[in-house]
Amino acid sequence: MQSSSADRDFAPYNAAQEGRDVRPLARAAVAAARPTGDAMGTRRVAIDLGCGRGIEARHLAESGYTVHAYDVDPSVAPAMAELAAERPVQHETLDLASITALPAADLILFCATLPFVPRNHFDGLWQTMLEALRPGGVLAVDFFGDRDDGAGTDGTFLTRAEVEARLAGFDVLSLDERERDGASFQGPKHWHTYQVLARCRSSRGVRRRAQSLPAAFRAR
Image (cartoon, rainbow, N blue to C red):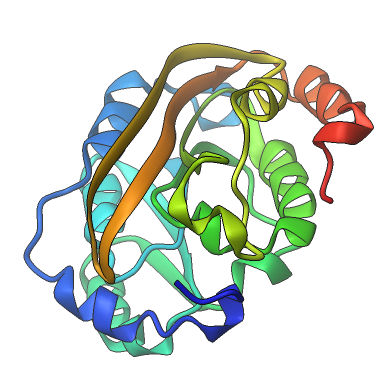
């Protein structure tokens, strides 16, 4: 694995994703979601961070959401343009680490992309996500753990305590920690992951708790 996330070429990985099924985390997020706040009686809004070729974005759109989808890989832009012509999906090509604002949303999905956000940018992105999520909104995230093979890179790999600290202010619907040896797109690896599904209690409370994270849990 590259020591820097900036060295990663995602085009081969994203090309290989064509035809796969919707990730279970995305299905669980849709099942857990409910109309919230300003979205009552209107089309709900979802954010898909690291959308790839739009498999989950399509599922969200077909489940009644207007989807804002983001990915750093320019090779997926044609597929996303085709999807946007068929469904209420808006796509933007950018580095997730550069995001400083997101639209108000009822669901935020962050599947298998977190480790490629540099650790020194993650807390800023996380705060932006919390500010975007409406009270009652659903957060669905794949965190990667500190015992994952990738933990020696500049990406974001967290201890369980760090994951739990970032979920203060949420009702945690599920937190599934797994550790195993298996395959990855780049070959064999040791996986350490946390799959999280959580509901926001109130935007103000979540933001306040995020801003008061212990220094040991902030970007190092």
